[in-house]
Length: 310
Image (cartoon, rainbow, N blue to C red; front, side, top):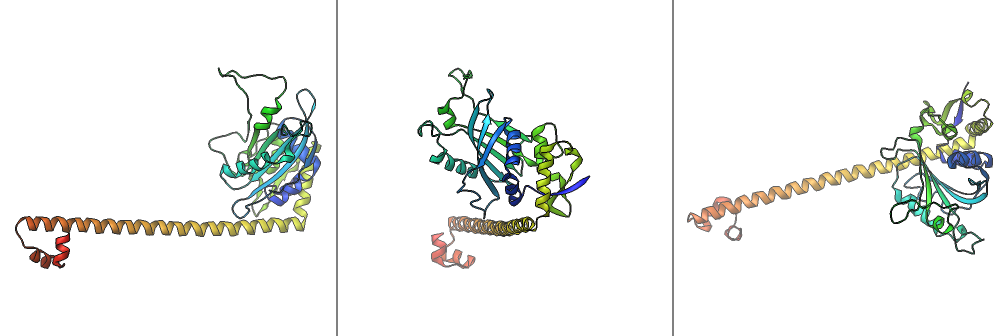
């Protein structure tokens, strides 16, 4: 049966979704490919700054995961979502704030090492020619000869200075459900946007039948779609970004007009230069043939002084 759920690409819906601890665990476990046994949203002073230029929603998590040895490990997850193309500088600036935050140091190491960080980017646009909907950028260490140095356990010093990244290209999710992660991310698939209302996705709940986790996520998105306050917040986002788009369009049009005006001025200057050069060459030619400067000036309709100067 087809049902209607709120579009989690909207900041208000995404926040409502990820504030649910069970859903945060489900999504982060699928993204990290490691079991998340505990997760907490951290205080975030920098969330959603510069909203007048870009839609970039950020949530910080402190997550306890089970590593490959089934041992508990605390990590930080910096999750950033945007539905407009943006320059990478904004992402780097935000990560820099986290690297400088003393709260991200481990207590056990007496401030010596930072808690390992993983950056997750949910992008509403494509990245270059990468055709995979989800890619992992993981750091490795090598010796001088380029051979990878294998460590039984990650080194805390290196982990303090490096971070792995997970990049999700939402436009490439279109109907792809080949693994657990893609199934979880299918609730972000914008090919399911309801034609009459982009705040709503139209999904087939049968594809999630028997999957308790997915049924739970879909049910929460249904609740969001039916919530008047949530719809009001989505409307506010639409109005906000419509105003931003109108402003940016006006700025672009003004820039184009100025560019055309500058080009016209340059053309006029070039025409004047060419005309002056032609007159100068004519004066030289006539003077070389013995014509008096006074006669040349009268013929050209300029003063004798100007003719002599040219």
